[in-house]
Length: 253
Ligand SMILES: NC(=O)c1ccc[n+]([C@@H]2O[C@H](COP(=O)([O-])OP(=O)(O)OC[C@H]3O[C@@H](n4cnc5c(N)ncnc54)[C@H](OP(=O)(O)O)[C@@H]3O)[C@@H](O)[C@H]2O)c1
Image (cartoon, rainbow, N blue to C red; front, side, top):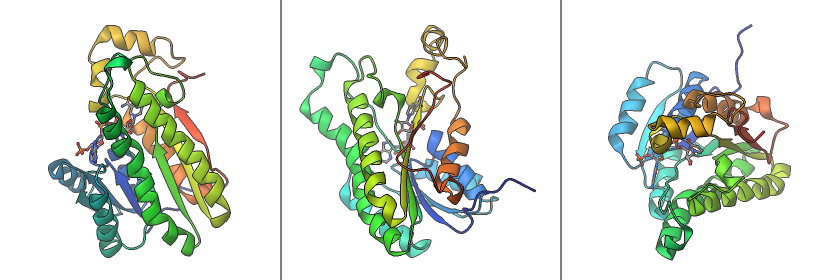
């Protein structure tokens, strides 16, 4: 018997679904028959991903959206409900990473932007979709955090701060909404080879330093996250909530 996840016909939103980790998550979901709205700023990348996955069983709907803007997020949910139906699954994956460097060079405007894009976006989307999930008897939310939210990243004050914040939102929402049928989990990737992390993997000495310490001494790939994400969103993970799954080659072991 083929291994299948019960995602067929489900409606999902994946922010940042046009490339990198979000794209790998989208691929697994549409392969399993879910209809997925992918949302980010650059329409071209979104449309290219939608075309690439057009042969898979679920539909991919590209929606232009800056997750740092409340009105864009409201429009995103309205569009998804109109085009695909009520939202069963939400993946808060989009993130930015400004203000890297010495922490005394970080200012309040940088903090505002990081919180808007990496944290408030998730809160705003949850507020929009969660009441419907509860009314329909269930749903699933997945936040893409980082192992830097578990242990401070050198020179990454704001990144670690926002990811740690999203971890606590995950666990708090899981406690509150579990009894109402909504599961909330997080995946904390280690170093994954995407545009986001090229500062590290484009330099052999930085890669060696980072992955050399891992039990699994290779760079992670987006597909390493995609399968786990699809499982966490599916009913097959129905007894799993409030968890932060590190997918990091064992870096945090
Ligand atoms: N790669 C790693 O090593 C690593 C490790 C730990 C955690 N993560 C996390 O994994 C997630 C995905 O990152 P990735 O590695 O896949 O990076 P990526 O390939 O650079 O993708 C980042 C995505 O976020 C979107 N995005 C950025 N700012 C946005 C905004 N204001 N509004 C809407 N979308 C926005 C981008 O789309 P547009 O440019 O089109 O807006 C893009 O789709 C992030 O949460 C990141 O923190 C990554």
